[in-house]
Length: 91
Image (cartoon, rainbow, N blue to C red; front, side):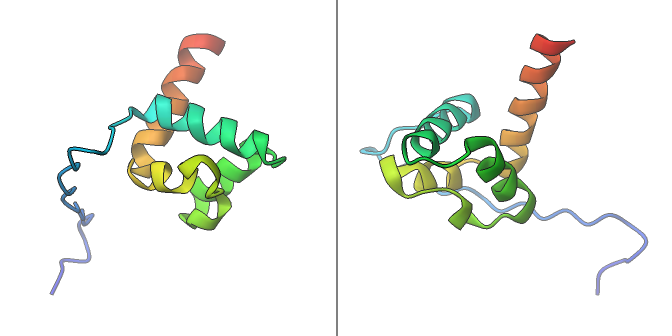
C-alpha cells in the first residue's frame, strides 16, 4: 500500500521510436499542432490549453497527424516548453 504522506511519482517508460518514425522536440510538436489546428479553423490556444488541462486528446485534431504527434510528447514537456518560451520572450 502506498504511503499517503509522500508524493507518489509514476514514470511510464517510453517505447522505442520506430526507425521509420521521426522524433520531434516539444517546440516542434507545438508548432505543428498549432498550425494544424489553425488550418482546420480551430482556436489553437484554447484547444491546446484544453488538452493540457484535461489530458483529453480529442482537443487536438487528427489533421496533419497532430493528435498522434502531441501524444508522443509528455504534457509536462509541452508545459515546460511553453513556460520557458514565455519567460525568454515576455520577461
